[in-house]
Image (cartoon, rainbow, N blue to C red; front, side, top):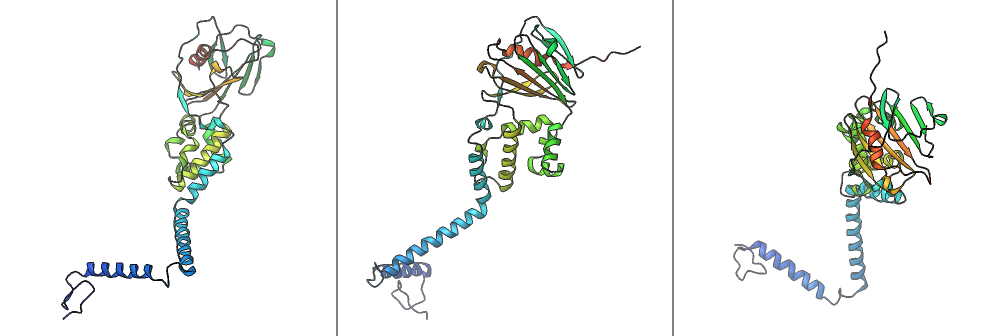
Length: 293
């Protein structure tokens, strides 16, 4: 014969043990809270404070264990890049695809040909050093054209950061390392808002590093970044000529080479338009190889 309980009127074995336990526990808590020896005493207040402190410490420890690195990264990127607003910009489609119909001249450098929509070239100020050519115009504007090997940027990141290709693959994935274009696309699409406490530690660390690379390597782009595609190249244009920036930079990538083009505008000189830029960019192609007899 079982012992009776607080909720059973008979001495038979309890048929609702769970309900009995709940009722007994509730009764004890009510009695404890109503006890004049406990309620309102300094000891009970300190106990409540200590209990809450313990809860805060435990919850804070758990949070830091799971989200500490991510939270630190999120705070750091917002602090680091608050004075570099260009980092928050991402590529947008280029809306003006028109091409200038102004009479032009053909230029050829480093195995590539392209068309210039300006005829006032100042040949006395033309300079070529290595794989860099700088052309000047009588208007005061200037033009930069240079080439570099494929995957040059990826290799420089690996070398500068003392990272082997396998390390970079683990950080950014194999697709991002297939070409300079793929790496630039991943880099330029990243913004500080991506780094939050709720992504993985790996994503937080790799994202913070990539944002630092973006801030250092990206040309000035106060008026925007624009995606560009030609018959042979894919790339990005930094700055909108309508904003009249001092320099408009275009970076193009292919499996064979990379090309950097800069259009520099002097104050008071004729403005360089998007159709003129398009004429240069869309006309870039490999020069025909002349066979010698």
